Image (cartoon, rainbow, N blue to C red; front, top):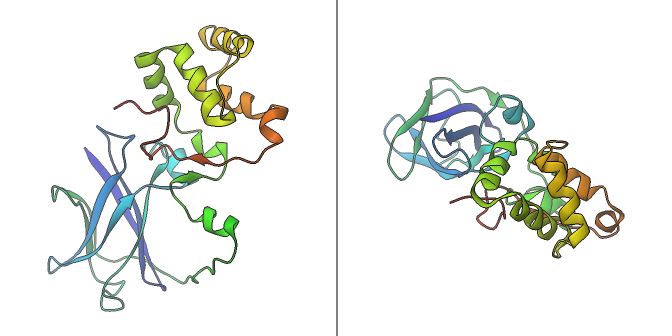
Amino acid sequence: MLRGRLDSVTSTGYVVGWAYDTEKPFWPLEVAVMADDAREVAWGLAHGYRDDLVEGGCATGWCEFRLKLDPWPVVAPWRALSVVERATGRAIVRKEMLPFVMSEEKFIDTIDALLATDPTMIQSLQQLRGCEELFQTYIAAHGVDAFVRSAYVYLLSRPADDSGLAAYRNHLRAKKVTAYKLLLAIADSDEYRLRPRQHCAPTVGAFPFRVD
């Protein structure tokens, strides 16, 4: 089932909302925003992260879209807009009147500012807290050892050592930690803190815990 919501139109010409498929919650939807005359006025992936989506149980929390409207300001915020799955045209949500939100374009002048706008990268491991179901699906398909090995590569960019593999394997099997908490434990090491790292988001095909 497709779920979604239209949240607002911004003064800078974006439409904001969220959408995902409950049958494929770990894969981002490509959505289209339609005007009442059936014109496509925006399209793109619903793959941005929001804390409130995690709290609301919306997939992994990585299902926001923020899409530039074209034309703008012909598409007025008080006009009805609809969101559909772009590939199939299946309806997701329609709203008659969207809130109009004042916003400013953010000037990107540093690498950190650029990375902060990139939905394919996580900004903090806290953004993976809604991924426990995804991790458990991976463990069911590939086993505990595979999860620990993938966690080492994802976080430390190296293979798991024998002692680390054995310790974390035992913790997971004894249910002393969840899969997500295990990632936090590895990231709490001196090795992790001594070198800044960037990690891909769970919506990216390269995310090592995906199950096709």
